[in-house]
Amino acid sequence: MSRNLRLLLAGLQAGMAGGLLVLIWLAAMSLFYRHTVWWVPNLYASTFFGDTALRENLNKYTWSGMAFLLAQFAGFGALFAVLARQDRDRLRAVGLGILASIGWYYLTFHGLWKTFSPLMLLYSPDRPIFAGHLLFGVWLGRTPLYARRLE
Image (cartoon, rainbow, N blue to C red; front, side, top):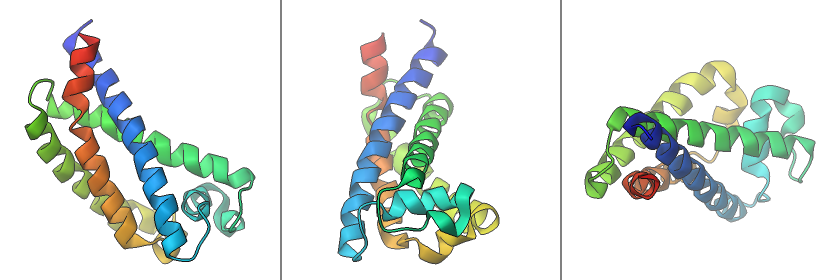
């Protein structure tokens, strides 16, 4: 297996696992903010379905919101792994992962969402989402571990 393919798959794995961790984190924080655990996935679904997706219950929009969130994190993990090329040094991968995820947070929440999903900016719990991106960045530090397992 080539190094690029190994890094791509390792990043995809780290991104998906990190995305699941962020999803769990945001579900817990939604309860803290007196919403249901489905609030953030429904908020992500509002990108495609508008304000009809903004409900407090599990519904048909929730699944697309979860899939959208997980696809973003998995894709970012794969892109990060290929660009950072960290398949040996885990500490460096954690540092780069944190920096990259902070940059990605600012790019999406202060750039892309203004155009594509203004409801996300209006209703999102921005501090927990920022903290979720930090958790995700730490989890990207597992990319070298996943890459070694694929060797």
